[in-house]
Image (tube, rainbow, N blue to C red; front, top):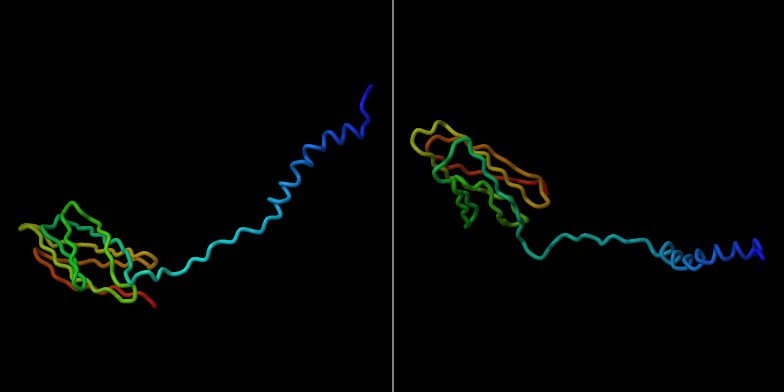
Amino acid sequence: MTRSPLTATLLTLAPLAALGWPLAKVINHEPYQQAKVEEDSSGPLLQADLEIKAAHPFKTLEVSAADTTWTFTADEDIKTISFPKDLDIIFTVTATWPEGTPESAILLTLKPDGRPDRNHTLWGFLELTEEIKFTWDR
């Protein structure tokens, strides 16, 4: 004896009906709400990468801001630094080159988190001391 078309249809649709209820719960779930990002006010310091590129190998290179000094070696080209968020930053760069080095350039790039990068090229011969000020729109 063969089944009726109605019974065959209901038996085929029964598994779909069983999956329909959980599927409806997932589909009708409240939309995902993205977490709001608030400005980090946990501390007054901003993290940044300070990168140095030199045209000729230098003997010594120091970058200072306020009461902190970062010393670079000829093998080292980047350091992570911190500086106050609400202030512009003034660097004093001091570099020396070995005897016989022609006039040379140093590219100083500051890459702060959440702010545009700033860079400045310094030129010197044997010895260099220069003050650089990086500013951002408030």
